[in-house]
Length: 381
Ligand SMILES: Cc1ncc(COP(=O)(O)O)c(C=O)c1O
Image (cartoon, rainbow, N blue to C red; front, top):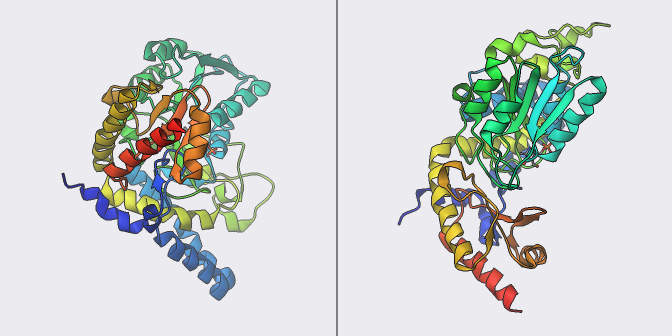
């Protein structure tokens, strides 16, 4: 079988040095990142303050690349440094002093997201966490039942980091929209691996970051805001880049920009955009559908290899709700994962889950075989 996507492998020469099955945690580094970072430093060195003329447009350039992956209209996406900042900006948009102050999310959310919403309790927010029965999935009916007329925000993950389960976002968003609540969709574990369409999902907000499936390294995150909501909110967590005329340096009141920049804060991390744009560009060129098709084939193959060995599956088996990661556990899995990493078979281990591995568009089938052979070798010791 010819694997067309392997032609992208030449953009990641380091992949010939080790087996990289950890793109759910840290995507591989595209070789052109070094050139892009050099462009950034060169601009700074050679043009001093004039570098901003080129740096500032990078904010919208990066946002536009992300919007095409999200299926979002132009000018509905902006950037931040990480998802925790994005969630904090959004949390600062709401008033928790009225009866509509309930926040609904699940126990399988990424912890950072939970910490930010829990912190809103001191401003009057009422937190409702829907528990998982199996640590893998969340009952969509339980989520919908928890969302009622008093709910203001529903910060949920599209794909859970622990189990790679794909949530039924459309159903949850339909319930939230019916009661005037806002879904904030964390796409960190989906964008670049699983198709996302924020318009079809009909969510109010979406976010994620560059580190994982987008092969962008740490430092860049994105925020999508539904077009008709953009000028409805005034984030209390703000900064001069969110002002309608930042270079007027006006005081003391914030006059919010009328466009998506009103969700910015202080100076964005421009260098992170130079670093992250290369991976986003590659993912855009390949297209998420092609990445997903390959991922479904290879994750199915991984499932078969775990079953042959009698490992306990800690992720969802059926393809319709299985994200890009396979999670499995067995005796001593944590220490074996550490040994695998020492031997340059990169994976990770998470408590209440197990070893997490993910193929990506650059993964060869034989690397999956080599990975499981290495597990067998270590277990025989
Ligand atoms: C679903 C999800 N959300 C958020 C994060 C990270 O959040 P932050 O960008 O704040 O570090 C991760 C992983 O690191 C994740 O898997």
